[in-house]
Image (cartoon, rainbow, N blue to C red):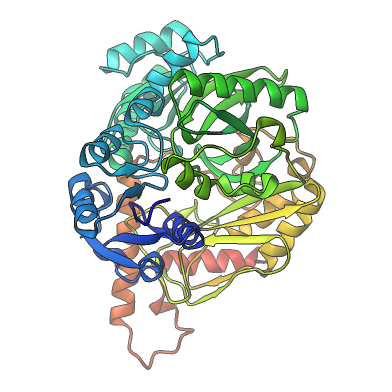
Length: 509
């Protein structure tokens, strides 16, 4: 096993990896941007080094600087977490060249499966059903238009180098194609350092089901059940659960074996996830492979009892998987709610600022993965997810009850969060019945009838500008306010927060 590793990430996933390393008595090295100097993962790691200014492109995406720190700290391996450089084949290859183990698949496997267009080609060669789409990245707008007209609108633009809903746009007519391509490329470049995109036929009202796979370096590959990821907003997952209410043992086995076949064809090892769309007739179509640990990996850990991060470390260190496919059993049910620093009463606008009060829920079979603390400052520079709330139960009914109770206990003051939104979802009769699809949020919560306004599509530059304006207004108001000003004075509050709180009070929050 390794003696010392570097974690090339931040926030809750960096902290999650540090904890696994402590269990295995591995020394950890954290990196941080200037904005993250006081972050929790920096405090928990054995060593920490500043990697650069706040913008990710100058810090967490700076490959050479990260490798420079790895050399200085004399680490044996690097764990990329998820996001940032986790699916960057160049980073994995540079680690290999430097003689540092990349805790994940090989650079060749990332090139083959981490790139979405390359993954589609492998899937097609292996006879895996795929959604109709381009086999290569879109070189110019005319190529995109020709393909869209050939298969018919709507189509979806996707980032070739990443996932998580970043760089994704639905296009329903030719008039919107040019602007959608521009915004998708811009967002993909900001999130992954690669503006490449491709097109797929857009399937209406499917279920989004993913299969977790785990393989060692000796050709053994297992699937660890499925995760239901259909509760999404703007293609970003909000709630995940395992098992899925629509997946029976036969479908689970068929999807699992298909996922294993595709992963082995790419020479894959370590943890990975294959994503599928499933229609109402239980036909499934391969979407893409995430060649990394997923945000939602805790729900799989809860139902299988397998610590995926520890398994990643063992596999990277050259150990063999110690169990067989027959030993992988799903016990009970688990669900994860992603808690974002966003205002659901105000178009889910980012809510940067200081956390004044933080009281996470407690009790049996409740887990909170978070990189924040009371007094922490939520930055405008990075993803707005501040925590993941995960619960386990004997069945889905108990999970829903436990999640509702945990959400009621979860108190965060000083910023707006999506906790009230999750409470509403838990009470929705369609969600309780398991009757939903990937457009559930749009149809149930963004139609103006349930307290959440319709949102307009905005590209990455617009969202960044709005976040920066909000942060500047909040900073100015705090700076201008006198120390003697009562805390109830509305002038010291961000005006957007003030309006959001008034709406929340009127609606019973």
